[in-house]
Every structure is written in C-alpha cells, then in structure tokens.
Image (tube, rainbow, N blue to C red; front, side, top):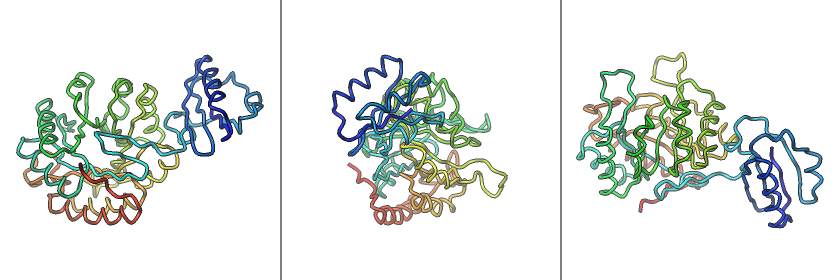
Length: 340
C-alpha cells in the first residue's frame, strides 16, 4: 500500500503516522520528494481502511500496490536509487563501466588488464574468482586466491572490484569486495539472497537464463527485504530458440525495468551474445536504451583466455569502444565518472 502525503505535511505528523504503522507490524519505506512524501507500507495491509486513511487532512491519496514486489517497486520509491560501490555511483545520472576478464588467471594478467581498462576509462574492475561452469572439467576459478589477486589489482590501480559469489560458505572471502555479483544461475538461490540481504555490501543481481522480469524483481525483493537496499540489476541475455549466439539480449527489459523499479539497471553485452564482435553494437544499444552502465569482458590475450575468450575484447578494442561510449553517454548528459 502507498500513502501519499501533501507537501504541507509537518515532519511530526509524518513521524507519528510512521510510528502508528510500525506498531501495526508494518515496514515503512519513506520517500521524500520536493512536492510529496510517500509512505510505502510493506506487510499485511488488509486491515487498513483506505477511507479512514484518506480522511487525514495531510493525506493526498492512498493506493494498493498489486505487484508482489514492494521494496523494489517504483511506486514505493519514485526517485531513482543511486548505489555507491567503492566510491563509484551507479544510477540516476551516473553512468558506470565495469570491465575485466572472465576469470582471474595470474597476478600479472589481472593487474595488466586492470591498468588497461582504467586507462580507457572504466570505473570498476571485474574478474571471476569462483566460476560456475557448465562442464565440471572446465576451469573453476582460483577461488580465494583469485580474490586476493583482485585486491592486488585494486591496490595497483585504485579500481573497486566486482566478483561473483556462488556459495554462502565463501562469504568471508568477500569482506573487501566492493560489489558482490550474484550470477544468472544463482538468481533464485533464495538462501543466498536472504543472507546477502543482511550484508552491507552492494549487490549486482544478474537475470536468470529463463526468468521473467517479475521473477527477477522478486529476487531483488529477497535481498531488499533483509534490509540491503543497494541492489543493481544486470541484464545479460536470456535463452531463446535462437542458436546463432549464446543468448538473446533482451534490450526491451531496460526501459521496462526503468518504469517498474527505481533500482539501477546495467547491461552485460559480453554474456548476451558470447561473441566479441557483437559486444560493441550491443553496448551502444544499451546506452541508447537508458541503461545505467555496462559490464564488459576484457582480456589481454583473448585467444589464450582460460575461460570465455570468444566473448572478450582485447584492450585496444575496449579502448575504441570506450571512446564511442563516452561520446554517447555525454550526449545524453550521463558522463562516465572519472577515476580517482
């Protein structure tokens, strides 16, 4: 349920109303704008009488929210959420580029790539330490050692790091990670999502291979229901009947999400197609669609990458892409934040 208060409402009246709702066992999401204050009520609101609430002189209107996701709903929070991940702002008018290799391989490799993507203008460094692979015989990642190497790359370049968590047992390894990624295969790992809801770390939540937008938002709701409001959504392509490429990038999801939720939305064009030559046009499309950022795989030698080399750009290709992306983002008044 949403209770909209007019701009003349006194702060003491807002506090009193919030207290009343909380005493009824409801969680209250308070959103204060220039002209209105919105109270988003989460919980069993069936006992609340809309007519009684509407009778308060400072209540402008009362509406029930039909969608099952509440905290993630833009109706509850009209203003865009801006997530701060390691000093990098994502959302609102802030455009972010996350780049790096699919897998962390060696210290030399990850530091070299980190320096290259930083020089091209990337804000954050990505790299897989724990790797979910379709085949049990494929490289599974360096695990804890991989995170240590990411932190070495952060020390060398100053770039905040992004890496994927696969299991609650590994949570302690992520104490110094700036942005924790939940991969497509774990989008509905509800035990993991609930635990991350108790974390103070920003979460990058990728869309599942065959999940609807509502299911995706409900997964975000699991995290937010635990108290962690710093969630970023990442569209990375969905599985369709098409076989020419790995997945199909659902670019229509970006404007739809912008309407349905206040959470930042970024796009991963690398996993969407699985083909490096398709990454630049898909990245440009993502910018035009209104995405808040990109996640791009970059490797210093894609032909010899330990995983997903076919979808990785080399540093020169990434630099060329960034030149184009910067121009497009600035044209839309969403410049990429400068590195510290």
